[in-house]
Image: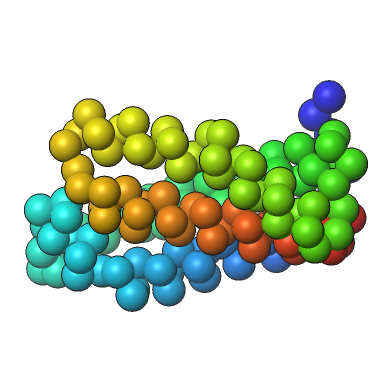
Length: 134
């Protein structure tokens, strides 16, 4: 059952960590990502909308909240169980879902790496944080 009795501080810290990872990730991979999606830096600068960041924050909070619930159901606590739970969530729900989307969109494997890689790192880190703070 879904529980709201999670460690909310851990959920919030996990969400913030995920946002930082995303900012750094797309900072590092900005040029190849923009090239891979057929956009320019100018387009990115002109098309920044506040609601995109609101969606990203909500996404990070929901990911951390549901990951905390999955870990509680699985009895996963500690560094390695947290890391593995994050990995399994990425494998089962994010990484290969992105692969299917990118395949049908005709996007490159490298764009898949960029887009799904940030979720892999984010879920691993969130799993570690949540696992250590269970």
